[in-house]
Image (cartoon, rainbow, N blue to C red; front, side, top):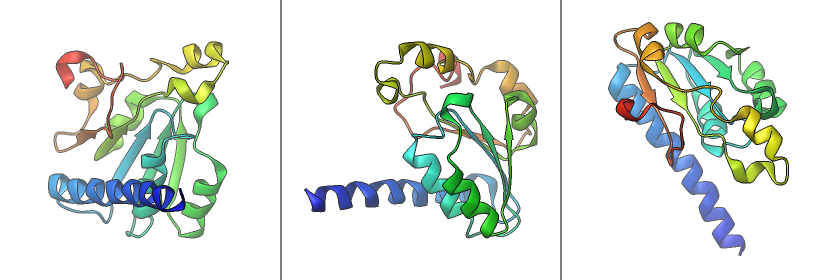
Length: 158
């Protein structure tokens, strides 16, 4: 069991490495980028790993956009601060998308809410990448998603 858990940890970090590679390939740089992490930031392992890895680069700014119930946990925010990475929490996806090089959208995970279906329903569907979001993004900016997806995108976006 210990080996399996260790393998899952490595897979999560491997995903973050692949995401950083994709960002560098698509944007052309990693230093000085602005990244919006959107969705379930409290439970999403990929966004936590990506935030951690982005702290290795210079002049990065990270925006956290999520429903209150799934905000990024303090440990990651404290780590970013300790590494001199600027970060900001926002409820406005449109504003953040207009500033970012990368919008990294994640799904709201039903299984993380247990019996609290009311909290899931409140959080689900709050931030959706649609034509309006794409229209405010900079021409060079990209949207990324770790998959699987639910309803975070209007179907034609995918």
